[in-house]
Image 1 (cartoon, one colour):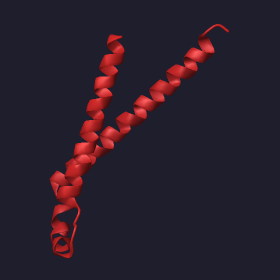
Image 2 (cartoon, rainbow, N blue to C red; image 1 turned 90 degrees about the vertical axis):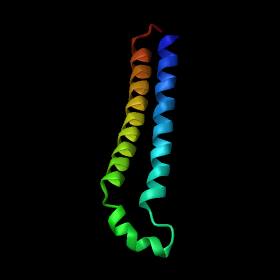
Image 3 (cartoon, rainbow, N blue to C red; image 1 turned 30 degrees about the horizontal axis):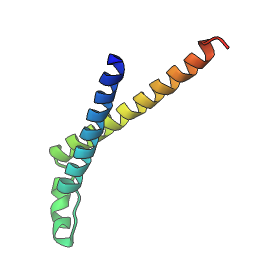
Length: 83
């Protein structure tokens, strides 16, 4: 049961990190009106925006790993368990 709790906390933290970093990227790096378009040429290529995109990609990859691991365990259990 401890493994389930730890996994749930990890997935929840990963979701929170993904959500917050997406919000930060939208707030900092994407222009929302015409006056911000000229500023976006500088901010979009900034190290902050690049770091936020890297965090988004890493958290998305973590989700993919969790899904593949869960699917693999389910398939392995169905093949190994006696019928």
